[in-house]
Structures are given as structure tokens and as C-alpha cells.
Length: 137
Ligand code: TYD
Image (cartoon, rainbow, N blue to C red):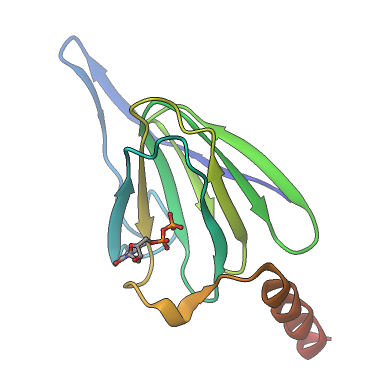
């Protein structure tokens, strides 16, 4: 599947770097929630898809790998820069792993937290993808 990476504008001068992210401008959704993951002990996370929520992942420190699966094909990306964001649309299965020491993964989300928005079983995810394909055809 096609990866959607957003390269942020970096305001760099002798004092360092500054990146600004604005909703519906830098990224294509309204930001309803921000969370971040750290101290992972290199344990894998994610293993779910969202029915409605879109997300943007930014690795603020260190690096990590993300696997994306839209039900048809898979892609893997390494996030290793705070100047890059990975857009994850709704109905994309994602897994995060290969967390480096001191990795901080920040996530901007288009919806408030709602457990009903999660599909946590891969077979259920494929079932829902196939159902929506049949409804649209
Ligand atoms: P979980 O979904 O397991 O994290 P990951 O996306 O890395 O697999 O979430 C871990 C816990 O945090 C779980 O109890 C739900 C809670 N949580 C919130 O309260 N709000 C949130 O925005 C998120 C993403 C999780």
C-alpha cells in the first residue's frame, strides 16, 4: 500500500529547529486528541485498525518501525525524524515495533478516544474490509 509521509517545514536557525503542525492545513484533519508512547522496552504495540479515526504519527526522538496493512497489501516504514509524519487513514491495520532506546512516538488523532472505534482482531478487520467492498460494488 502507498505510504503517506508528510515532510514538515522546519524553522531552523542557530537556536535549533521548530516544527509547527496545524489542523486542516499541515495535516488533513482536525486534531481531537494527542497521545504519545515512550519507555516501550522494545515491545510491539498497535495491532489494530480504526473504523473512523485518522492518525498522524511523528517520532519525536529515536526511531521505530510501523507496518501498515489496508487489507490488500502491506508496507513498512521507519520513522526516525521529528520532521516527518506518517498519515494513517481509517481502516488501516497498524503495528509498531523496533523501538529504539528513548523513542518517543507522538500521535495526533482525528477523534476522541473510543474503544468502539477499534478493530483489534485481524480476521474481523479483513471481514469488515470485504463487507465494505461488497457494499460499495
Ligand atoms: P492501546 O490501544 O493498547 O495502545 P496501542 O495503540 O499502543 O496498542 O492503549 C493502551 C491503554 O491506553 C489502553 O488502556 C487504552 C488507553 N488509551 C487511552 O486511554 N486513550 C487513548 O487515546 C489511547 C490511544 C489509549
